[in-house]
Length: 135
Image 1 (cartoon, one colour):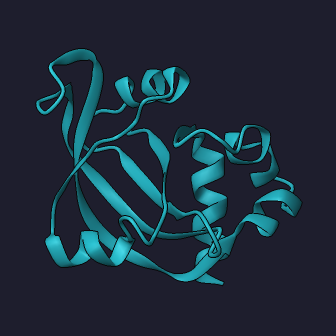
Image 2: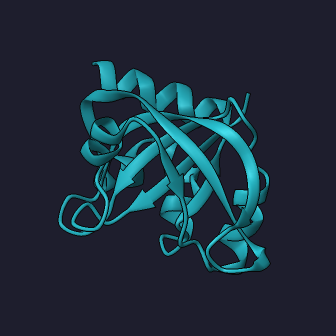
Image 3: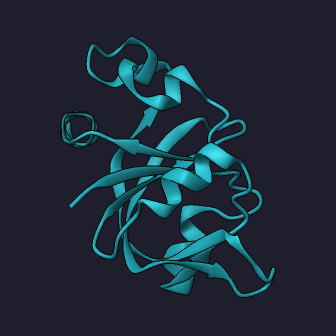
């Protein structure tokens, strides 16, 4: 299974909201590059939820429960959504500064192109993030 990082502004939709709701249609992605990444997401993939804004940190894990499909609210086949369910909050949040300074995580799209809302993570990126989160 692949891994991705999804960014969200916690004042709009936080990981705690996903935990409370138990499922969400992840919508609102409009950037072309982010949409390309979102189209590559598959059922069963791991998603790291990252809070933007003042928090700037990876906060939780989720699983994709449905492959990408056209956003039913827009009527535009190019704009896709996926369904997510929460897995667990990270025991320790991983800050943007850690991403920037860690020898493995600094190669993520989060550091290279911080404006993307959906980005792939390599197996090494996910492994390192989980190591740091449990330390």
